Image 1 (cartoon, rainbow, N blue to C red):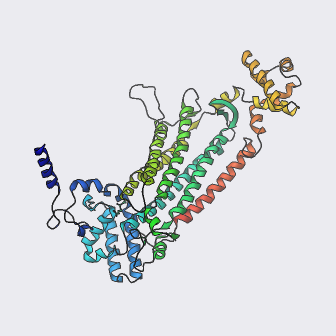
Image 2 (cartoon, rainbow, N blue to C red):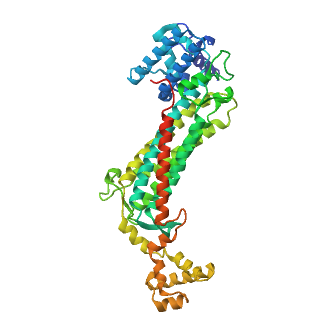
Image 3 (tube, rainbow, N blue to C red):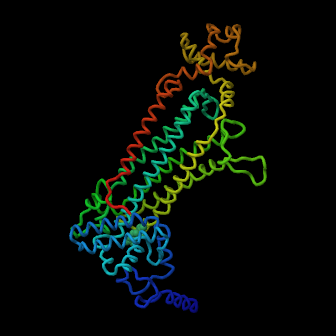
Length: 500
Ligand code: ARG
């Protein structure tokens, strides 16, 4: 026992590390208060450079804006700000060229860039962090980053809308069974079916535009928590970076991650829609349905069964959706127990956020090209829509028009279906005597309203399957897409004044 304790103490001592002067470590920006160097294990554990280096561009843009503002407010000599900006631009070049050595000893992207700046331009580089904390800095980087990502995803959605609406236009005359409970229900136009997905993704685009407005807030000036005692000018920084407003509360500015959570939610719903559609296309591509033929280029084979052509891309989209819900869950749980304001836990927000960004972008992009190449098997759809009594509701509706209450009409039509099932017939094949017994009062001309085309055309109300209605829906969708495209172009040509 005694010996064990002794050994433990020795180990602890050894691990206490070296004192700062003469250490092999890169000097930490916060080293002043410390007597010892950080344990290497702690450096490895606390670093975020391995994943937040993705934010280098945003970090540099934010720093240039900050330096220009400091000079304008006479907190920093103009010549210093110029030198800082020049150094930062060179660093951006080094990173882009892959010549920058990221160090985990410098923790994160902010300190990696700042240390390199000081290395390049000397002590003047040490003035950049005046009136700023990494807490407001990282909030700014994340907002700049998400603003761009949101616009990229909006662009990808526009691409999907286009493919989708083109396919809807070309399949306006194709009819197929619509399903409820995965049982044949009523016939629909393929265009109608496709445009149901348009409506889902259209809401997704709207959600992203709304989120963009909430992301569009410039947090610098909040400092670590309480704002700044220097006469900083956040509005000027906002103007330089093309933000429409500044954060109204410093504590909220450094500790709010709602926007990251909202992005993961928006991504989750996009993945939900992609996953449902993928699942449907997987079913449709099976031999049992045979409604679509997927292009070979978007399928893979089996290592054992030579005959196989598998819809793996669609299956992976369906599978990846789950991991994005995980990202959303991770962020919600990450934030739920944090008192104000910044806590280091929040560094962990980036891993799920970046994963959600990468996943939603990859899925959207591959799905759009896959959809473009899908071959709809129109004959097969037609065959299936003719079988299965998809016109039974219309028979009941016909009886209602003859004055029979709907409940009785439903019963009579149900009996007619039962009879047809026994006889191996379709409703439209019933003879005059059969009609007389099954549904007295129904004339054989009923067959006119039982044709699949007529059934589809009968639903001539907004949102219905009549050609007129689907054409209208398509026209409106094309108009929406055009308006969205214009808005995106406007959003992307922000009046930001700093470019790298
Ligand atoms: N790497 C940190 C993050 O991403 C930056 C902010 C750190 N602030 C601090 N006081 N330790 O959250």
